[in-house]
Image 1: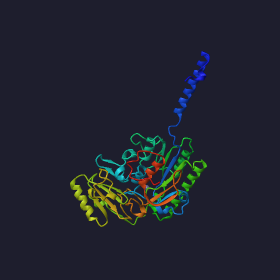
Image 2: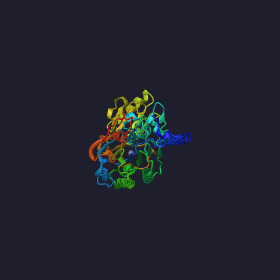
Image 3: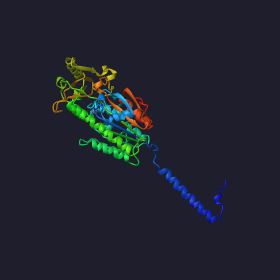
Image 4: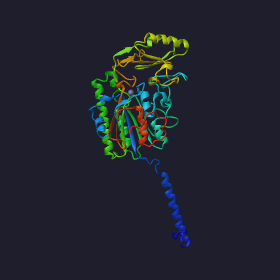
Length: 403
Ligand SMILES: [Zn+2]
């Protein structure tokens, strides 16, 4: 087929050809300079540490989400219901036996490394959501999320703000607001807030200090929702709010460490609240520790590694202790001397069947239904976020999509 425009004098034809080539080159560059991500949706997933399921009733912000959106009334944590394992479960959609963060304090006996001697994200055995998002061509942003320090097998979030001792909730809130105002905003924003964990430990979950911290968390939600509305992003953003675990009153402290004969590094006793992983070096130590634990058997549950029931098992890798000791609800193991200066009035870490260990999950915005359900697991959050953002590689997750 002959192009009509190309008919004419050779000089004119040359000029027209030149124009066509220029247009072609221009279009070629335009097509390649377009952002690779056609997905303009954003999921904001925020975690308020230690907010118990029943602490958000009648608290503004939380109510605001529930009125228009989705709520799981009792969000089941994992065992142990501690900050690091639970946040790893939220981020990977898997239980500790799969993601490898078996407690907040533990030893990897094979390598002799203590968690976390090195960049913490390298300890994760499963990819966190921000890595999956980046691998799927999306942009992710992470602030202070436990286990997010460092890259995971060479992949890091596009935007990152690390946890520091002096990081304030206001800094985290401003970071989120600035990101959603960006022209090329990230598709996934994950941020950790202090929540009510610290006042929960110091004053207990029934204290005014704990309740006030939940109120302040609700106010953060209100302000973020307002900023989403101001930026006209209500139809493009989903806001999901979770917590990692609940909190219960501490009634009694058990002195475990001083009852176990300790020679040098081993037996290594890793205590996190009501959970202790005990690692031994040889068969003699094994029987010594077993005998010591038997003397204390009325005070708490303990298991040899091979006998741990499935629901309390964190897997058979060298990260799980040769013995696991777990307190009854309300009891905790006394930490080693000098580890702590103040008395604890609240604690978590207990098996997730204890209602006090349940946290919160609420969501509102793009692709989030208006619905309330009674219970779900924190391992369901990652598959749900992955579905909203059309992220692949979720087949190894333990959780299921919530909507
Ligand atoms: Zn926590």
